[in-house]
Structures are given as C-alpha cells and as structure tokens.
Length: 225
Image (cartoon, rainbow, N blue to C red; front, top):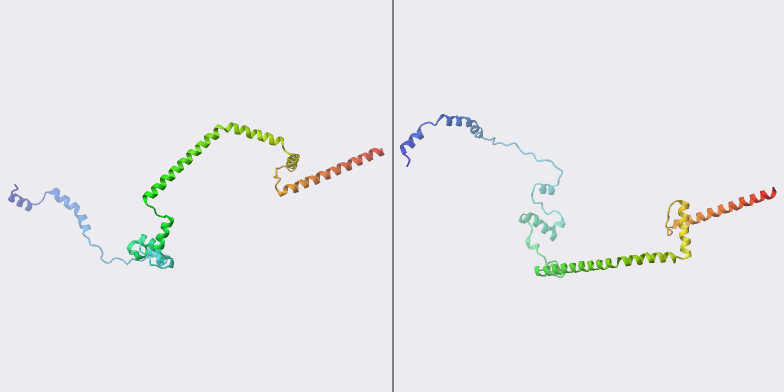
C-alpha cells in the first residue's frame, strides 16, 4: 500500500536533472509545434485546361449531367447507374426489362438454369470426347493402310505418265521450249503463254526462211563457179 505522505512529497520535490535536461532538449520541438498556422490561406487558382464542362467533371471524379440523347437510352442509363450508383440520378424503375424483352430472352435462351447449363456442358464434353475417339480410330486405320495407299499412288502416277496423250506431250514440249527460250517458266493458262508461243514460232519461221535463203544463195554461187 502506498504512503500518501511520501506521494505528496514526491509531487512537490523537483525532478532529477536528467529529466530536466531531457525536457529542455525537447522543448524546441514542442514550441515549434505550438506555433499556430496562418488562418488566412492564399487563394487557390484553378488549372486552366481545354476540357469542356462534362469532361472536367469526370476528371474531377464527379457525376456528369445527362447531355446527349443516347444517354437517355435504357442501356446507357444502366451503364450510368452501374458506374455512379444512386448519385447518377437514374430512376431504377426504368432499368427493369419489359415483358417483351423477358420473353425474347427466354426464346433465345440467354439465361438458363444451372441444371440445364450443366447438362448442356456435360453433353458437349461427351460429344467432344466421342469425336476425338473417332478421329484417333480413323488415324490408326489410315496408318495401317499407309504403305498400301502410298504404293497405289505411285503406281497410278506411273500409269498416268504412260497414258499421256500426244497432245499433252506436245504441250509439255512447248512449255519446256518456251522456258528454255525466254529463261523462265510460265503457266500455260496464262494469257501471255500464247503470245510468247506465237512470238517464238514467228522467230523460228523467220530463222528457217533465212536459213533457206542462205542455202539457196550458196547453191547459186556454187553453180556459177
């Protein structure tokens, strides 16, 4: 139990020097914190921007007023209410879907019960697994007959090469000649192919006539000698 006389004496006697020193060292901080602030604050100057009133309100975190006609549409009012809540000033009664919209959603099956959705998901998963199983079975079947099919393909190619008509052979020869003459390959279906073919034939005829003329001249010279 504390002695009340000793407690009274301790409260009257001065504190030790260490405590006084600590108090004196911390005094400037307390005196500095006790300085009152200037009650007259300088006037704030708004930042000048090129934002219109609507964008300025949005930038400052406020709720812009309804300005455009599209904002009065139901989807825009729903978006406005979802973003700003009750502060948007939107009448919640106007956000509910109409009877026609509900019937349309039911007809298009936009929303389903969990049991229906789970059943559809399981059915789709089973169909996908069955399709993968059938595809793998088809691949294994094709792998078993791969060598036979490949041999049949090579045989058919050899047979087709042997059964080529004379017209096909002439066309292939012309393609090779044009390629060798002009220095590059061209598709026979290209309209330029006929032009190049006629040009080549004309040059060949010209060269043939020139060769006949030279042969005739040489023959004539030989006869006169």
